Image (cartoon, rainbow, N blue to C red):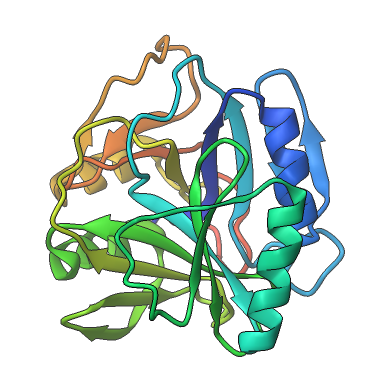
Length: 253
């Protein structure tokens, strides 16, 4: 068995407001709104249950550094990219400088709470979310770990990075890129994975630890139904409770 990528969690000072912004940016509805979390996902589309949901949670701390996890939004071509950028700037996004030269085919923006994201040309045939991107010191080694953690497979790899695709073959991809900076503060975006229904949750956590993950303290009480780990480069992620996962058969008796 294996864990599978199910959501991207975004820390927020105002989860409801930030979720509404991303709901409008992606054209995905808010599917759940509670005091502790707000969920945005593509319900009612052919992407339903095929892409990670976005989960917004409250945190007391402000953003302190460039995010090591960010989202890429899809555009069909340069004209579509520019129209999306103009729409998002009018909605409250701002230009962001992450060291780009200015000659890139993508545009870097930040959402209203400062989280960087890109708008790039990918053909626009897989929905509004093109990729979930993860910074890495050693992208090949980190990709090997995330193949095991996410249930996704490597479809492209070279010196510029590694691309993982979901079992559905649909975007978004999980793109892992080399960067010189190390992980130094808790990520404001992190990934959630979950084992299939009827799997052994403790065994899956132990498997990931054996692959190089480490338990990490982020303020949890110990009463949670999930376990917080960090990948081999220190990026926090959660192993959620076992659940039904699209295209994943339950464990045999």
